[in-house]
Structures are given as structure tokens and as C-alpha cells.
Length: 74
Image (cartoon, rainbow, N blue to C red; front, top):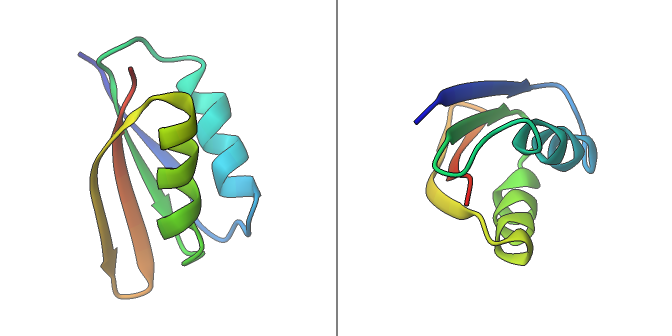
């Protein structure tokens, strides 16, 4: 299992989702990706993208204007 972090801060929709999609393509099944964003829209957009593409959302949290989504690549 590989853990990666994607900095998608200061990007507006749809760029965080596009960057997440591009990063996931470089990962293996079972890898964990933490996406760090400042656009609150990602709290709906990235989990929806994960559902469509079969990836698993492990955690979502908002902390002081930052939105963190942890997902497992399936």
C-alpha cells in the first residue's frame, strides 16, 4: 500500500476532481490518496466521482477553510 497526498489548494471546480482523477491513474489498487483542497465544492464532487468510478472514500473533513478527502483506490 502506497500513501500519496495531492495538493489541490487554491484550485476551483472542476480542477480538484480532474487533478484527483489524473493522480489516481498513476496509483495501484489499495493505495491511499489524501486530497487537500480549499474549494468547499469538493466535499460533494470528489465523493461523487469516487462513487461513479468505484473508489472508496475513507474520510472527509473540513478544518479551518481546508477540505480533506482521503480515498482508497480500488
